[in-house]
Amino acid sequence: MKIAILDDDPELLESVSRLLNEAGHRCFCFDRGEALIQTLRSSHFDLFVLDWNLPDRSGISVIEWIRNRIGDNVPVLLLTSRSLEEDVIAGLEAGADDFISKPFQPALLRARVQALGRRLRIGSDGETPERYGNIEFDLHRRIVSREGDEIPLTAKEFQLALLLFHNLDRALSRQYILETIWGLRADIPTRTLDSHITRVRSKLSLRPGNGFKLTSLYGYGYRLEGVGQER
Image 1 (spheres, rainbow, N blue to C red):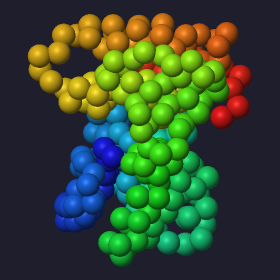
Image 2 (cartoon, rainbow, N blue to C red):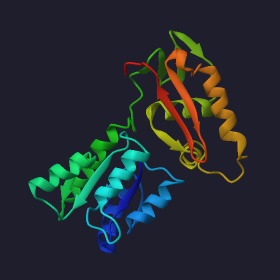
Image 3 (cartoon, helix red, strand yellow):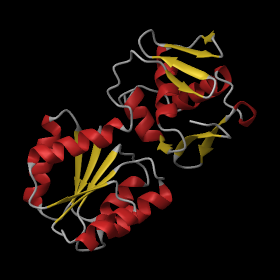
Image 4 (cartoon, helix red, strand yellow):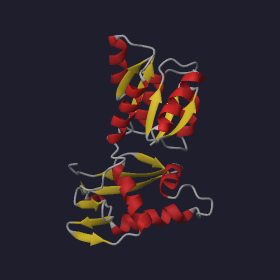
């Protein structure tokens, strides 16, 4: 996962990022809430580890910004020196998915991050097909089908479609999609993502009448939404 860590303690930033990097994640550190928010205007993260008390704005206000602008699907873990019951309740009610008090046990933090990550279906074993409405992904054979009929997709189209469905109802930035699917290769033309989006939309018939709507978000990226689907 691509993880944003927000804390004004440089030693804690270093220890948490090292711990999670060693667990196989990619960590990006911020010591100010506003710096993270500015980055979020053009970048995307899979999970957030946030402190509560910060010099410029509270971690709670950052959570509120994330929930209002990005949505409820991205996991947020509060890592804070606050430990009173009312603090835990306030953090969870503000939109945090989990709460760990400092000082923390490294194994506990690693396990909580892994548990939150499983909600994103990252690291699926690929044995069980994933179904979204009438669309099914066979991760083992890398095949997509609709109502039993196979849909021919290129490898990149399959990866892009799967990424969109794994983040259903969640806005994804262009940079995040390019980084995830193409690794931000410098030789990729600007229109490559747009043309792949167009083909995925057409091949999978991602239209409201079929239960899904793939929307372009001006200046940001794309969002795949479920329309009247039970998921």
